[in-house]
Length: 281
Image (cartoon, rainbow, N blue to C red; front, top):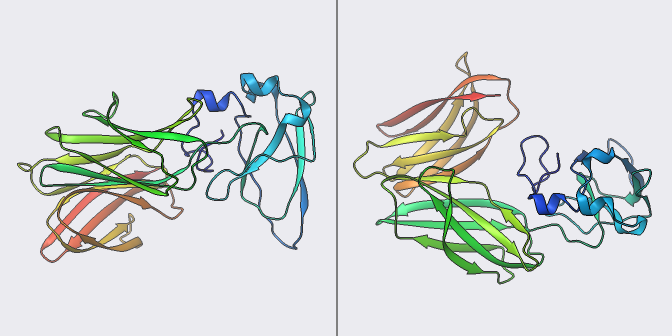
């Protein structure tokens, strides 16, 4: 299916409103040799078309390329009866098919946070702001039911911040909702921060099982650490250094392509050593 971040299979989903104006499919095309412009032609079954896409005129359908954010849809020729569209490209990456008279939404590149002095400090980065009116920051105690607690107006920047001073005891989940000027919505990923001064220092991994990208929830003392992922035969398949300022923090970790199985995630620094299991699917 199509995704806001151009990731096949496990990417962030477009909203129902956004999918109505596009084909719910993702094409991954890469150049293996040569250079110059190549004409790409995409076809699709009618069952993947959104409601407003189905009624688009031939000159209103095009191909959009992902380059950190979704580029405007372009076409050399299109036929919404035979379900095909073509255009020439000299650069390659994931592609989607959408109406040429809409702009695909903002792309969230990260959402991170820390808890210090009883407050959650949240930071998010975006790749672009097409028609964004505002960001609504939402919180939850269970990761399922969310409610907005503050709003930040869009200001043509690539990074924003917000603070939550009303924390739940234990887990606090956060996400950011981008609201376009026409009412369309785009959501960031969800992060978890732990407000547990009475709970032992610990690390948490979510989602678990994972398809390759995880969030590492940290509630450990300040210091320098080494993160390692170890396979079933004791080999280190991933590692990175970490400087932690103390308190609770959520750290996104993009793992390399790994075989399915159980791995051990180790966070080690000085006399501190935490190990958790994670299943890669």
